[in-house]
Amino acid sequence: MRETEYEKLLLKAETTLGTISAIFFLITLLLITLFIPSDSLPFWVIFISSLILFFIAIAICLEIERVTGWYECGKCHHKYVPTRKAVLLAPHMGRTRYLKCPECGMKSWNRKILSQQTAEL
Image (cartoon, rainbow, N blue to C red; front, side):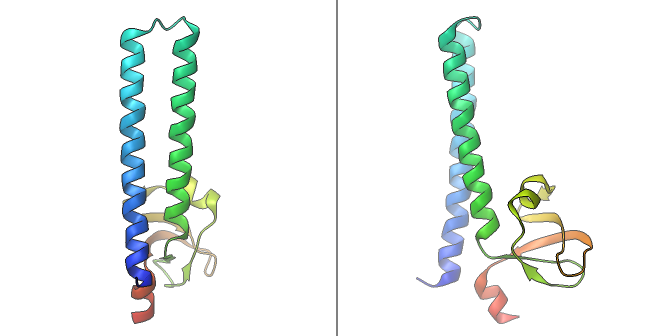
């Protein structure tokens, strides 16, 4: 399997994991609010457990997003892998994030590029 195909597969897995974990969390939240009194211990145990699982899944998704391929600066076109903190805090639209480039120091919308796309540039 070529590197680009592997990266595309990783990004699909990230999308699937994020979607499934969000749906699971919302369904769990709906069910416990409908069927378990909110002042009981089981309510809080289930709620906190599902919240922890949701945050773990989102952390895995963000790490996959961060290390798969590179980001390209919108100003100087430098290609780089951002820090975890930058990916977590950056506003984004799809796979494009508003990041500060480590090369030129300017903030801009940086797009995700995969290995094969980089080799062709």
